[in-house]
Image (tube, rainbow, N blue to C red; front, side, top):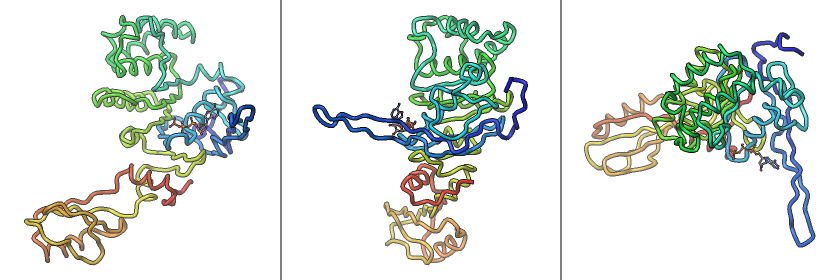
Amino acid sequence: MTDGDFVEPDRFIELDGVEKVFDVRRKTGFLRRERRQVRAVDSISFTVARGEMVGYIGPNGAGKSTTIKMLTGILTPSGGRLRVAGIDPSRERRRLAQRIGVVFGQRTTLWWDLPLIDSYRLVHRMYRVPDRRYRENLDRCVELLELADLLDVPVRQLSLGQRMRGDIAAALLHDPEVLYLDEPTIGLDVVSKAKVREFLRSLNADRGTTVLLTTHDLQDIEQLCSRVMVIDHGRLVYDGALAGLHEAGEGERTLVVDLEREVPPIEVPGARVTKVEGPRQWLAFPASASAAPLVARIAASYPLADLAVREPDIEAVIARMYAGEAEGAVS
Ligand SMILES: Nc1ncnc2c1ncn2[C@@H]1O[C@H](COP(=O)(O)OP(=O)(O)OP(=O)(O)O)[C@@H](O)[C@H]1O
């Protein structure tokens, strides 16, 4: 297949039954070694449409980085079929490199001892980016990622947040159609996180860049991705809307009730008290039930001052999903 070949836009990234098995040898005694296989990715299938921004999440060791490495061609799948922009990554890694950008939050692709701008010049040459395109992309990144004052600073002197912004720019100078981000906000302060997120949002909206985002920070997902895929033990356990993830994992919502004074735990049908702190009480009730009748019953019998309904937070939902309690539907 060549660059000009047609790729169905809704199958821009395509995995069909993809597997990755590692052979691991472990020393178990003086001369004894045990051989075993780790199934890091276990028959994963999904497609990502051109221009989508998808979160790829899961606990430590779930298989996220292994998937990303197969998508870049660094690792070859042990089985299944994988295509990115119609290209088989492990067979045509160099050709694919022209079309993808990669940012690993815990590692830098920049040259440590060189000023930031020198790394960009090297990327310019390595990827043979046409001068005008390079200039335009650089100007855009410098402006939106606020890099102007950092271009002459050696990378080793940059803060983590500055370095991350520098890395993101480096990954985009050759105009990739897909950007893989592995933990792009790890270790960043609130302001830097906000800048990175805002930039990614505009990149996706203005340029239509397809983004696959791996993160442990669920706010990244909540603020950026309308679709999320959850992987656990190498298997896809959920693929769908973020809102659906709440539904898939949730069992209960919480009513936080402020009373005018301390009273014994509230007793109402359809809810149970889970916590009491002075005049404040927390009541759990089924997520599928309406809060209104519950509120009316409490207001009729207790000195109600204020109340709030809390949705189950996404961390709790996902924690339950990992524990195998939730029935996440994989479409
Ligand atoms: N090169 C390798 N050789 C052997 N086992 C490996 C190798 N790379 C990954 N694994 C194993 O494969 C499994 C998945 O690892 P992977 O790094 O993909 O997980 P992850 O979801 O990215 O985790 P984390 O969130 O901790 O980065 C783990 O059990 C890991 O130990």
